[in-house]
Length: 532
Image (cartoon, rainbow, N blue to C red; front, side):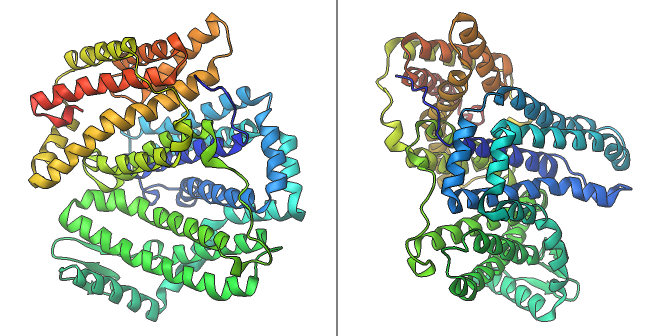
């Protein structure tokens, strides 16, 4: 049966929503929209606005440390967040702010860069204020925030303030790239790794240029990896500050931090190697506008998580027992409904950063989604998954309607078909297999867990009118993520009706699986995998 239990630590799930929004904004303005602050007459203001995403990501990372470092205050904060009476109104403010942030995308195609910025800056400013203020007060009431910020003798606001100025601190570290020894070591390491992979590199340390036969990159200060060293130091400093009561500071700073700095430098070497290789062998556009925009933050996130995981598990670094984890995340039924969908969306964003066209990187989404579902498998087993004949029949009908009304393939489908045709037979077979697994087995589970199991049930407050509104609104959000809006809206309504018929989320999943299997069968019959 459908569980309507609330997540005790609702704040963690809201933070996951924030992370997904930030990733989408970063993708929209760094990949989908090619826009440089140098082209405007307000370079400093433009850079500050663009840095807000990085500042927000840094503050989310520090927030995760606060959860671990202050379990008692955070538990009280989470309890207040779970019973937050004014959350709906503030969510509306937050959602409106996020929507305003996307408005400039519609203005980008019209006018010069300077004119675009002059029009867009108001949307960015107002949207950022509304999204931030609404998000903070959607998460928890002001009194709960005040209590949390007062915990730890003022260490929480100090840590958050430090996270907010991380991009500024990173800018202060950029002159380190001019140190000849660091420059030479980085270029030599990149050349060595390229040589190990059977490629012949070209390096010019004086011009800060490195590349291969047809593709080379200029390593500017902002792309040198020095930023990553500064980020690691700031993250380590916040970690040491929050855990100062239990952490052995000498061992942490003399052992963990130097190793983390070496790892950060090594990641930057690998980032440059990957950037050059992607530009040479795959696509210069993907290398510059995709991988280059994401790799730095992606590697830093991996490293930050690794530092946290290692430190939390080593008694040698702590006085007494290691710090307990405050949230039993993987055992919560509501987290199981949201986190796999977040992983699916983030996997799509990463695929877009590394592959052209993005669907060529569909295996990345499969791996991310499969890993998230596997992590919550003990919780998911509790659902009633036995298929129902009515649900399967409804799904088959949805699949037939979707396949038979499919419009002629567009430019995106043609690009994917061309890219697939260029793959070696083994690679194509692997892509097709993973695409089928994702389309038939994983996507239906993830989307039904989120849209019907979480969104619909959160909106449904009882009574026929509330239920009807919940079905329509959840189906609208489902349709917004699919290319064919009307068809997806009708499919979402059918899946919702199937679930509500017996009160089983498993029925909606069965219907979705059947629908996607029918669509996959049509694609296989036509020999056109771009139709999936």
